[in-house]
Image (cartoon, rainbow, N blue to C red):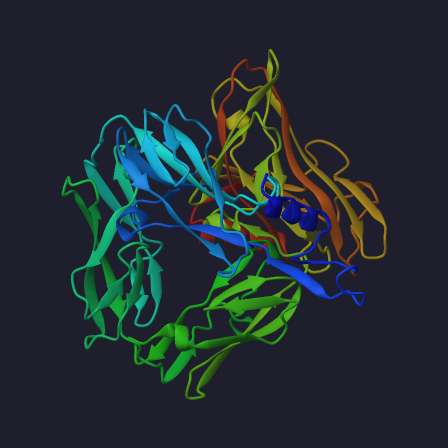
Length: 513
């Protein structure tokens, strides 16, 4: 071993970033005889043609494809530039696929496989972490692209915005995994030929098209294309929020709905809406971003939109305690999940389909469980809890009996426990049979007691950590089946439930109970 290597190792063992050795015999005061600058980083310097071929695999490794028999001279840079010892060691993790010489010449030996080529400062120990790695992926022959699909997270951008384009190359085992990027009109947008980062420009037209082109690098001349629209920045001069969801119009928001997309109009109509600023009067109740309100808690809140010239418009919202509204018309509002891993559950626009599983040879079960907890009921604000559901007994499949049970576990604001709405099975207060074959089961919290806790209080909320609609003991049937859940909501009165079925669902009903 060279002398400087011994010195270097000693300095590393002492944990010195910049090492120095001193000799008291030469200088009683400890004069500095020698100083070494330790490498902090080493990295590969690939030419542009090979750099464009580099991709990142699922493990996060930087990969360079090569063909059997191909050679490549790897160059590197060591930082800082004034490191004391510049010698390096080259290694290959699998010489069956790729070898590397002492001066960095890589040879692709065999495919299909890979080898990790590493360069490390010679003076540093193997565990220092100061090295550069390149995964050489070797193919026995060039497998050319047959098709390229160009994708992006959105198809419209504003002038000045950037957009990362992505390309999917077919077949999956194509040798080269990257493309060269270009655009049809550089007056509308520029694109980095290697990274696919598109930068939109301020074009003359309010809306302009630019074609993004991805070209294979394997000589096949295969291309993929996608049209991106570039919108000119036009500042909004005025804004008016639609008041359909405002308290003034009699609308109340349910916390479980999670978010609300506000509708609005602007002057001019074709303007850059990202220039509108949004604010919430109470972010503990709701936040807002680009006109999308996200509910955080109960209470009243004012949402305001303001244009760059100071014009504004507001809407007053209210999220009252106890209001539940799950109608399955928005997948983002979806609040239920399957209570058992074996239960199949599928969301549709307007209903949820649930597939039962066997409890035993003659009994099926499929529950509905709220996952976005806690769920809050308030018997003073919304004393009626109702669910519209297909009843297994009405499906004509031989079901003779079933049990419906709200398995709820909660605690009031004052700390009292409440469990098992109704205290058992089939304890609803009222029942409607609807013309679409469904039934509405209605629980009146002013009369239906919990098995633990009694009647719900009217002056405070109950927050439930478990909220599950048990639909079980479905007999006598030896196979699974599907049933639909149309909605579960809370109301102020039973008449309000009936009006909802008649006017919102648009169906007639028969009062069973």
